[in-house]
Image (tube, rainbow, N blue to C red; front, side, top):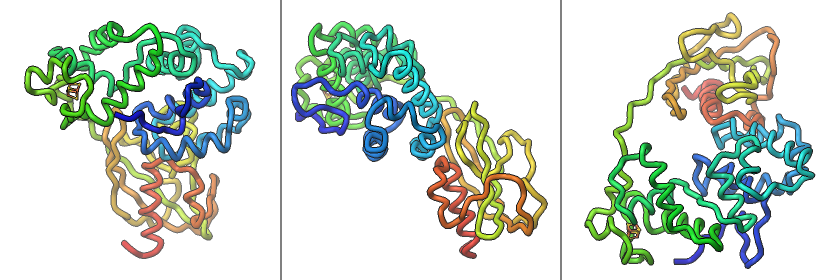
Length: 326
Ligand code: SF4
């Protein structure tokens, strides 16, 4: 099995740049490698080191992050870059303990940076590693309760040297061979050790507790145009999609009013799934004679506004309405 070539990994024996490791690990939280790659390339061209990122205006970083989701990560990214620059002289600390004191860095990310970028022994457990370990040891306890046990088992097999290489090899195995639905055990270098394979049903692991259905919410987003521009708002800094530009919308719990009196037309609805709930968002469109207070953005440059995905999809509805496609 070949090592995956990824833009944040070093090709040779040298230790990779901690800035690139940190940036990639934050981007990869809850997000696929394929989705992260173009963002990683753009970020590292625009902000090649942590000091450059620390100096960037927050609104520019948030716009560049648009579409990656989980926007609290972007706010923590800026906060962390500033702490590293101002309190650590632009050099990431190398121990898990110090790394965990930085904004947005939890147990997994600290272990990944300490081992991959600094060569320290650390136990790095992501979803791929959890799956591989649960199969190697045929762990019957269901997730999420089994998480600490899987961590302890991963700890028990992590070597004293090159634990970063070991973690990346397990992640690559989980991504390419020990896949969730159809593990390719015939190609697996660990098949002789695997208890799940010996038991004959490796895809049954990791065992998971039945999922509770996500609560559903409904809401409305308003597309209000005036003279070739559309009304946007900046969302409050704290909370869901905090600090991002967005279409005016209600609070998705039944409260909130249209931003202006107008002849609102229905432009359909979109479904979007957040971590904790599913949203059905109706889009209502209108033209206004008056330029109300707010941020007015040229409709033909709307893709440059850096709208988060749910509002970018709502904006597509607005543009269809404008083009009389509906
Ligand atoms: S033998 Fe199969 S189930 Fe076991 S670790 Fe390898 S790929 Fe995964």
